[in-house]
Length: 170
Image (cartoon, rainbow, N blue to C red):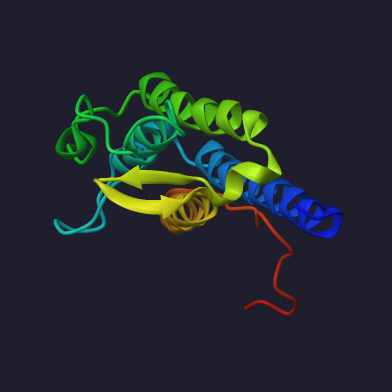
Protein backbone atom coordinates (compact mmCIF):
# COMPACT_ATOMS: atom_id res chain seq x y z
CA UNK A 1 0.00 0.00 0.00
CA UNK A 2 1.47 3.37 -0.99
CA UNK A 3 2.00 5.98 1.70
CA UNK A 4 -0.75 8.21 0.27
CA UNK A 5 -3.20 5.35 0.09
CA UNK A 6 -2.33 4.24 3.62
CA UNK A 7 -2.90 7.80 4.87
CA UNK A 8 -6.25 7.94 3.05
CA UNK A 9 -7.29 4.60 4.53
CA UNK A 10 -6.24 5.71 8.01
CA UNK A 11 -8.22 8.93 7.51
CA UNK A 12 -11.25 6.88 6.42
CA UNK A 13 -11.03 4.73 9.56
CA UNK A 14 -10.83 7.84 11.76
CA UNK A 15 -13.79 9.41 9.95
CA UNK A 16 -15.88 6.26 10.33
CA UNK A 17 -15.06 6.02 14.04
CA UNK A 18 -15.91 9.69 14.52
CA UNK A 19 -19.23 9.33 12.68
CA UNK A 20 -20.20 6.30 14.76
CA UNK A 21 -19.40 8.28 17.90
CA UNK A 22 -21.32 11.34 16.68
CA UNK A 23 -24.47 9.34 15.98
CA UNK A 24 -24.23 7.47 19.27
CA UNK A 25 -23.82 10.68 21.25
CA UNK A 26 -26.69 12.44 19.45
CA UNK A 27 -29.05 9.59 20.27
CA UNK A 28 -27.85 9.39 23.88
CA UNK A 29 -28.22 13.15 24.39
CA UNK A 30 -31.73 12.95 22.94
CA UNK A 31 -32.74 10.04 25.19
CA UNK A 32 -31.38 11.93 28.19
CA UNK A 33 -33.94 14.67 27.49
CA UNK A 34 -36.97 12.40 27.57
CA UNK A 35 -38.68 11.02 30.67
CA UNK A 36 -37.56 7.39 31.19
CA UNK A 37 -41.22 6.31 31.34
CA UNK A 38 -41.56 7.39 27.69
CA UNK A 39 -38.97 4.91 26.31
CA UNK A 40 -41.73 2.51 25.29
CA UNK A 41 -43.99 5.16 23.72
CA UNK A 42 -45.23 4.29 20.22
CA UNK A 43 -46.55 7.02 17.91
CA UNK A 44 -48.74 4.36 16.25
CA UNK A 45 -48.98 0.59 15.91
CA UNK A 46 -46.57 0.52 12.93
CA UNK A 47 -43.78 2.42 14.66
CA UNK A 48 -40.89 1.52 16.90
CA UNK A 49 -40.31 2.95 20.35
CA UNK A 50 -37.00 4.39 21.52
CA UNK A 51 -36.52 1.26 23.63
CA UNK A 52 -37.07 -0.99 20.62
CA UNK A 53 -34.65 1.02 18.48
CA UNK A 54 -31.99 1.03 21.18
CA UNK A 55 -32.32 -2.74 21.61
CA UNK A 56 -32.19 -3.23 17.84
CA UNK A 57 -29.13 -1.04 17.32
CA UNK A 58 -27.37 -2.68 20.25
CA UNK A 59 -28.18 -6.16 18.96
CA UNK A 60 -27.22 -5.33 15.41
CA UNK A 61 -23.88 -3.80 16.38
CA UNK A 62 -23.07 -6.62 18.79
CA UNK A 63 -23.78 -9.15 16.02
CA UNK A 64 -21.89 -7.30 13.29
CA UNK A 65 -18.82 -6.32 15.30
CA UNK A 66 -18.21 -9.40 17.47
CA UNK A 67 -15.38 -11.30 15.78
CA UNK A 68 -15.81 -8.85 12.90
CA UNK A 69 -13.01 -10.12 10.68
CA UNK A 70 -13.49 -13.82 11.29
CA UNK A 71 -17.21 -14.67 11.52
CA UNK A 72 -20.37 -13.78 9.64
CA UNK A 73 -21.87 -10.50 10.81
CA UNK A 74 -25.25 -12.12 11.45
CA UNK A 75 -24.60 -14.33 14.47
CA UNK A 76 -26.80 -17.41 14.97
CA UNK A 77 -27.35 -16.37 18.60
CA UNK A 78 -28.96 -13.06 17.63
CA UNK A 79 -32.74 -12.87 18.07
CA UNK A 80 -33.56 -9.92 15.83
CA UNK A 81 -37.32 -10.30 16.31
CA UNK A 82 -36.91 -9.92 20.09
CA UNK A 83 -35.24 -6.55 19.49
CA UNK A 84 -38.56 -5.28 18.15
CA UNK A 85 -40.68 -6.39 21.11
CA UNK A 86 -41.72 -3.39 23.11
CA UNK A 87 -41.11 -5.26 26.35
CA UNK A 88 -38.17 -3.40 27.92
CA UNK A 89 -38.93 0.08 29.15
CA UNK A 90 -36.47 0.17 32.05
CA UNK A 91 -33.88 2.79 31.15
CA UNK A 92 -30.92 0.87 32.64
CA UNK A 93 -31.78 -2.39 30.85
CA UNK A 94 -32.26 -0.67 27.50
CA UNK A 95 -29.11 1.39 27.94
CA UNK A 96 -27.10 -1.75 28.79
CA UNK A 97 -28.16 -3.41 25.52
CA UNK A 98 -27.39 -0.24 23.57
CA UNK A 99 -24.00 0.19 25.24
CA UNK A 100 -22.96 -3.43 24.66
CA UNK A 101 -23.34 -2.95 20.92
CA UNK A 102 -21.38 0.29 20.85
CA UNK A 103 -18.60 -1.25 22.92
CA UNK A 104 -18.21 -3.92 20.24
CA UNK A 105 -17.93 -1.21 17.58
CA UNK A 106 -15.32 0.70 19.57
CA UNK A 107 -13.27 -2.42 20.31
CA UNK A 108 -13.30 -3.51 16.68
CA UNK A 109 -12.48 -0.10 15.24
CA UNK A 110 -9.52 0.17 17.63
CA UNK A 111 -8.01 -2.97 16.09
CA UNK A 112 -8.55 -2.23 12.40
CA UNK A 113 -5.63 -1.06 10.30
CA UNK A 114 -5.68 0.62 6.87
CA UNK A 115 -4.73 -2.63 5.14
CA UNK A 116 -7.85 -4.28 6.60
CA UNK A 117 -10.22 -2.10 4.57
CA UNK A 118 -9.92 -4.33 1.51
CA UNK A 119 -10.27 -7.60 3.41
CA UNK A 120 -13.48 -9.54 2.92
CA UNK A 121 -16.11 -10.13 5.60
CA UNK A 122 -19.57 -11.61 5.29
CA UNK A 123 -22.97 -10.44 6.47
CA UNK A 124 -25.70 -13.07 6.11
CA UNK A 125 -23.34 -14.98 3.85
CA UNK A 126 -22.92 -12.03 1.48
CA UNK A 127 -19.33 -10.88 0.93
CA UNK A 128 -18.35 -7.27 1.64
CA UNK A 129 -15.06 -5.50 1.90
CA UNK A 130 -14.39 -4.28 5.43
CA UNK A 131 -14.93 -0.74 4.15
CA UNK A 132 -18.32 -1.67 2.70
CA UNK A 133 -19.35 -3.42 5.92
CA UNK A 134 -18.29 -0.43 8.01
CA UNK A 135 -20.17 2.03 5.81
CA UNK A 136 -23.24 -0.20 5.81
CA UNK A 137 -23.18 -0.45 9.61
CA UNK A 138 -22.54 3.28 9.98
CA UNK A 139 -25.51 4.15 7.74
CA UNK A 140 -27.75 1.72 9.62
CA UNK A 141 -26.77 3.16 13.01
CA UNK A 142 -27.21 6.73 11.75
CA UNK A 143 -30.66 5.94 10.36
CA UNK A 144 -31.89 4.56 13.66
CA UNK A 145 -30.12 7.23 15.71
CA UNK A 146 -32.09 9.82 13.75
CA UNK A 147 -35.31 7.97 14.55
CA UNK A 148 -34.38 7.92 18.24
CA UNK A 149 -33.67 11.65 18.19
CA UNK A 150 -37.02 12.43 16.58
CA UNK A 151 -39.01 10.21 18.97
CA UNK A 152 -37.19 11.67 21.96
CA UNK A 153 -37.90 15.20 20.70
CA UNK A 154 -41.58 14.36 20.42
CA UNK A 155 -41.72 13.14 24.04
CA UNK A 156 -39.41 15.64 25.71
CA UNK A 157 -41.23 18.29 27.74
CA UNK A 158 -38.40 20.83 27.25
CA UNK A 159 -36.42 19.95 24.16
CA UNK A 160 -32.99 21.52 23.69
CA UNK A 161 -31.46 21.32 20.21
CA UNK A 162 -28.66 18.77 19.88
CA UNK A 163 -26.92 20.55 17.03
CA UNK A 164 -26.97 24.13 15.87
CA UNK A 165 -30.45 25.50 16.64
CA UNK A 166 -32.52 27.00 13.83
CA UNK A 167 -32.34 30.75 13.52
CA UNK A 168 -35.67 32.56 13.80
CA UNK A 169 -37.50 29.35 14.62
CA UNK A 170 -41.23 29.78 15.26
